[in-house]
Amino acid sequence: MIDTNKCKWKYGKQAPVVIMMDDLCNKYMTDRSDGGYLGADWGGMCDAENSWYQFVKHNIFDKYPYVRMTCFLVTGRREDLIIDGKSNISLAMDETEQFREFIKKLSKDEHIELAYHGYTHGHCSKDNNPDGFIQEWDTFVSVEDAVDVIAKGKKLYEDIVGESFKGGKYCGYRRNAFSDESIVRSGFLYWCRHWDNVQNGINGESLDMEMFDGVVDIPSSVDGNLFSLREWKHLFTREYVKAMYRKLRYNVTLEKTLDGLVKNGQVISIQSHTSPIREDNKRQYPNVIDDIDNIIYILEYLKK
Image (cartoon, rainbow, N blue to C red; front, side, top):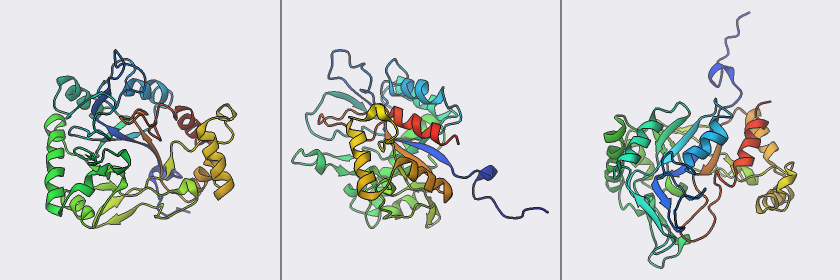
């Protein structure tokens, strides 16, 4: 007998897995004398020693060559969270030849997809409060305003790479009444609109891929900072305490989250950031530097 049922995923796989890497941009911190320490890079150090790229290459791609990562790229100058915070270099993606060549390299890397993540990511609030940072789509006053800025950001990328983005993500997952229309009118094939809070047992949004006006809506479903309680070496860390709280409060563990997504054939999209360092001296969570042991644990767990 021939099974005529269609597979949900390619080659009959149970669930797709992707690492979502936010805030790739032409930026790095320079508050130490050389500015070259691990974790200082948001992408602007390109493929230099202690760069974000070298870190993920050695720790993820070299060990798991089948892993795919979507990097959400801020094409213009990535705005600081506060005024006069930690010193850094932040430029548009076309302002240095080194970064232009780096983006070309990434666009041809079989492990990486580049996606759109705004032109500036947003604006500092007037009171210099990082919690009041205005995310980019909240700064637009109309659909036309949003479409114009998107077009400017896409052109920077297209002029360097020679092709357009297929998709992208809202900055801070913030959107308003006309945001989705701006995505549709800008010709994106897919978009990441919402964070699902599955790690807290609160499914405020659907965990399935859906459509809005012909655009595929891809959920973000796994926090890269949701650690396993089985990893005893992290027993006295902030991450382990958070994982214990989730277990006690919601009866949710990393393993239970992953098993549920696989069982239901849903997207396992692991959320992370390029750098742990922020201008306001707060730690940025999740991030690939601090969470690398956990990301590797997830990849090993999914081998089964």
